[in-house]
Length: 325
Image 1 (cartoon, rainbow, N blue to C red):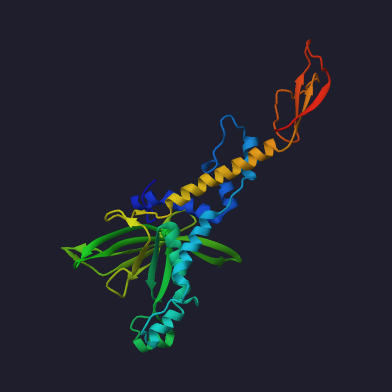
Image 2: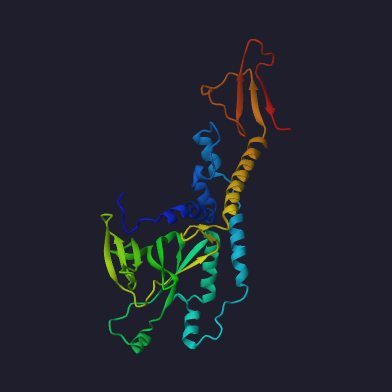
């Protein structure tokens, strides 16, 4: 496949299996069952029909979600505040994302996802204003900075460089979606937003951006591009795990818990399955002619085991129950 704006970095691909696991764990029972053999392997020689029954009735107690929620809520027992903030800053704190969410709520969501996924991102954005607009014009328009939380799974590629003695972002690509009505139908369009800085003769230029959208022919086209009004790419990482060197591979602090949750899911399901197979007696017919489908040997409740007759059977035609001790 040819590289395009949606190409993922090696760091992203290294983290992706863990992120996918966490997303499935947090989503709950239906997602775990839908994952099938990925988290609930088949038994040796287990047929599809028996496996499908075991999977569709699998038991899942979401301990992982409870632990993440408990850890993430601890720092937010009191409201997040900005001490000494002026009126302009306080207005932003009260509605940090432009959607009415207080900084306390936004920070709680970011911390929750940081604990679960080991990494979360914040982009500081600013609404588009007409060229030549003054500060007074922007105030009348209500234009102001706002924060956007970007899940780690949507940040496809990140590059940094040491500029003026500090690590700064030089390239980032972010997966987005845009939903809009087209001829009375709701349509969702995939987008990739790329922000970058170019180096020329050892000097780094100001940040630029390009917004791509996938069209009906499955091709990416540029729908917007331009320059940012600040000197840095406004991207901020939030990490709860250890970063590996200069890469963006982060050691997830909850990885061991996530792995244990998968094992617990398998153990719970197997225990439930074993209980179903042994908690009910099974009827046995000795010396009874088997049905036409005698090659099938059902085991468990609501099943009859036919042994068939032989010349030495002294209990021909006998039925009895086999039940667990």
